[in-house]
Image (tube, rainbow, N blue to C red; front, side, top):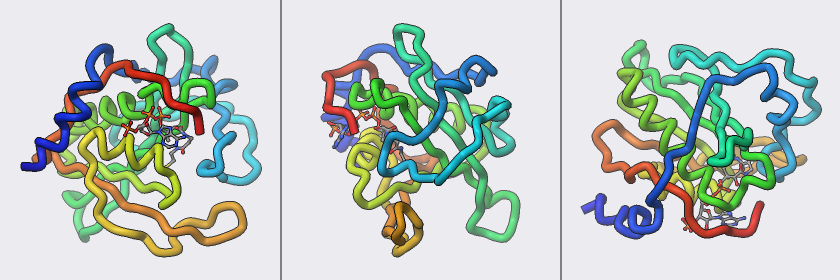
Length: 189
Ligand SMILES: CC(C)(COP(=O)(O)OP(=O)(O)OC[C@H]1O[C@@H](n2cnc3c(N)ncnc32)[C@H](O)[C@@H]1OP(=O)(O)O)[C@@H](O)C(=O)NCCC(=O)NCCS
């Protein structure tokens, strides 16, 4: 049964939940993006307004570490595969400040966001997309319960070349890992 796949994760991922909250103006100087080969958006102007926190539109939430530091952000935008509004689903993204990577926070934050989306919206599906080479993000998504659905060939322009991506999704009816907590440190990306 698919839920057995969570035995390994749930045994290790116990403890505090990631804290996601609406962004404030003070967060913006810390939410710079970048410092990762997988976060190549080209030159960006400094942000001047927090992302929208409502789940009915494109937006984002600040990730707060257990010590209260602003650790990064999760984002979402809505897209759809079918022709009607019932087919809409959120595609989530995440960026952590380099010093907060490799401590389980990415896994916990994406687990918390998926659970919030299923709780506060009627969506049947939450999607994520990542680079075929982004092992940390793939493992984080899989630990949460996202399933790999396929390769998006040459879908992403990054650092001077088209790259293959991986589409992930978790359905409302899929088994999901319990919200994981702190765990051992991993090297940072
Ligand atoms: C990708 C990212 C969100 C992952 O979050 P994280 O907190 O660093 O990752 P976690 O500590 O939760 O670890 C998740 C898994 O990846 C593994 N991992 C962590 N860092 C890794 C690395 N540098 N290389 C390979 N695997 C790594 C962990 O061991 C864990 O796997 P496991 O459960 O099998 O042990 C974070 O590293 C990040 O923000 N990176 C830069 C931006 C980015 O790539 N965003 C995603 C774009 S799609």
